Image (cartoon, rainbow, N blue to C red; front, side, top):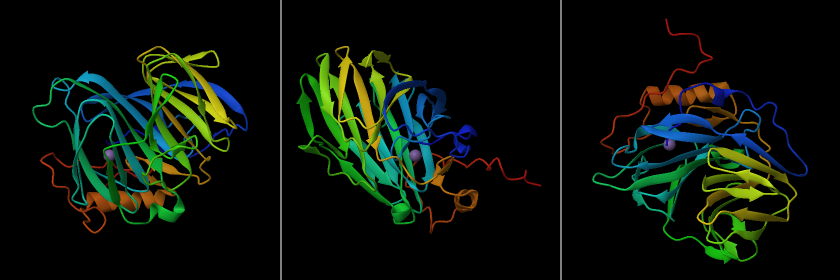
Length: 314
Ligand code: MN
């Protein structure tokens, strides 16, 4: 999906507290609107820009897809991977690599922007029923962020039960047995949790920091209840995570090695400097097809807002 044009995402990576110990810090998501859908933006937070390389998380729905269809026209990305994950509904993805992919619940769409890519996402015509999911961005490290764009669809992902909690690994690995084959550019993990039962203990990588975004129900960590509309930062140094949930709850566990590069995020771009963001803005606005090739989409292309730090146009 497309980030909003407002400015808070563009603040420099300051005030980022790196905890060396396990904590549970709950921060409310910000309500935004993307392509006609209300979203709860769990990341970035003013006080916490990233969890590992995870730098953006928009939880959308549940809504009635016929009443509030998703229509996100062609828009660009640089320097990040988009992760689309559905709990309910269907979304059709089209991108400037020529990919056209319907995604359903339990499947992963992973698009790597590198130097530049454009995509569009929409509710397929005639879709009825609920629409519920999350879109996440992963900041690409220096080694890959100038590289080629790529797209992966994973129709099946490794899934197992921890007690009566069903864990599906989107990216990275959980414990020693469960590993996703999806591309990762830095050490990180993303796991969907479905609580059929109430309690389990998950194995974690102690060198990672972790966070939890609850997408349905209520989940409890060390006495703190986390509900949709918030992100819980869990700190670093945990080898395991005892976790409780109301049956029917869903959550995304996110983690990774704390991202060492100081990122600049603005609109749909992740970079390191204003000059890089301005160059991407210019390339998109000027229709530079060498950086952002066309997307075969019936939807209207989304104009980039003018970077707020530039002087107003004469
Ligand atoms: Mn997008």
